[in-house]
Figure (cartoon, rainbow, N blue to C red):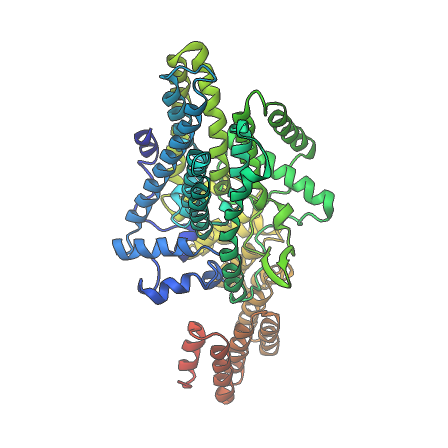
Length: 575
């Protein structure tokens, strides 16, 4: 099983850094006590892109350890990702095996069927192509590691809950906190643990006394939430718009429809993983009636099967409980969760409407249901039937995974796969144009922009890249139009600054200065605001370099270590 999983990722990315990994690996700075403490005090994305909203200190620690151990080797980091995925597959196998053995005699499952059913279900998980985004991206290893923690915690609860109840829930609490520090998706663990015991071991009773020790799982939240709040509060304020072109759902019915649509899309990803995409920023909710039908069928099945087939109900419940925190019901723009005036969570540009990596942990729940289904098949038709169906699943899924791995071998191949898989997605063209821009292929970008920019006026980053490409080929009027669209789409700070540079090239100095002023006014982060004021003075009023230096110093006071402000201060002689 582990070997089959490893073979499915034999052609995983090598010594390449693509997509989000460029911002995080190799890690910057030494691996020392100060750096480790710093991981717990800062937002993940804010430091890299100015878009705050994620708190994953153990992910940053993991990347720093890889950098220190392997000298920043991307190949080694990718191999570690594959190893973690194999570890998650083994953890799933061990958990499912424990569940099957607990019901083996009662369900009359032959002893030789149990390990085969567990291995087949875990292997299907291990080679499933929907997990390529989590495995092939170094940054997304957080999903894999959070999954390992969750499965280990559930396994501990299952094994010790009857005899060593306090020890079981205490160990689970430690693993829970570890999982949270890797990724927010572990947050559903308390509900999963209670669901596991209630459905799979109901003979012990469902009274309050039995589940009272589960309150120990609240202690990690007491530690995690204040740390997360402090880190996100200290992050730079983002002035970037969301990547999605779709209008966010509003109102209770709109949020519910979008949530049901996203949940049914996740079901589709597992059942029919094609085409595979990095970006689903064009997702608008899908067919509402179909979404209602899919979700009602699964939830209804879970309810009606809870007594005769509790493993099926547990698997479906697992799937939905883990996905729920990532849906728009809990990540709607502007949503805040607070206690006593302290905001612990707020939704922002870091929240994506849909992503394949998000289904990594939820799919382990479906693997539990699959394992019990295979065991039922083996009870009736014997081990060969389990082996045959398991082998069929591996032979069906593994080639898709091997093919998808190839797309992650480079930024260009990934972007090309993206536009093939979602040609209607403006964010896919944004990715493609961005890769081409990094390679200096401006003429090709111009061709893309001529064809697609007008179709996606709300893709602010695409419009910004188009403006830059037009500027490189001296189509300045088209650059002005593209930057105007970027500004209209919400990219105010960068859009106004870039438009000002184009106006300066065109000799329209007064308009250029006005755009630089608008860029500074639009900047929500106070430190960046003063930095942009310094740029304005330095560029348009060279006789006032002392004033520019004062602005740069103010930026550094507000954000110590602000690298671009430090460089600008040296440039104007204000060391």
